[in-house]
Image (cartoon, rainbow, N blue to C red; front, side):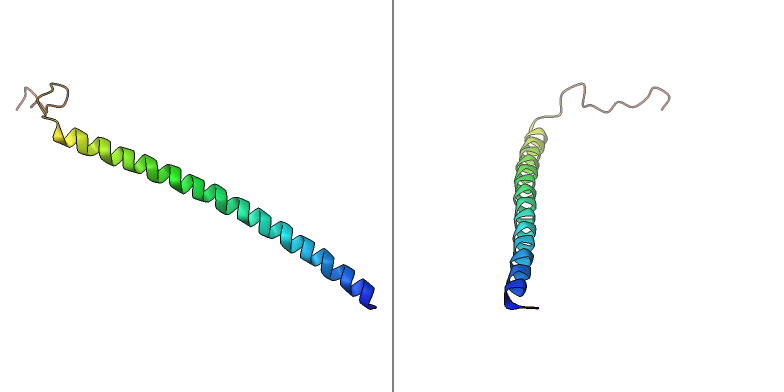
Length: 70
């Protein structure tokens, strides 16, 4: 194999590696965005839950009633 063919083969391999690296980078960016979104949603749910626990439980919808057969 002469040096020109070898150089061309290396350039082709490098192009494939660069494309693969860009694809991986794109996946990592999308995953980080999803992690950020889910973290924000989890924080919202925790705040909502703590707000619900702080409210008095006088609401008729949240009261547990004993069935009449007891």
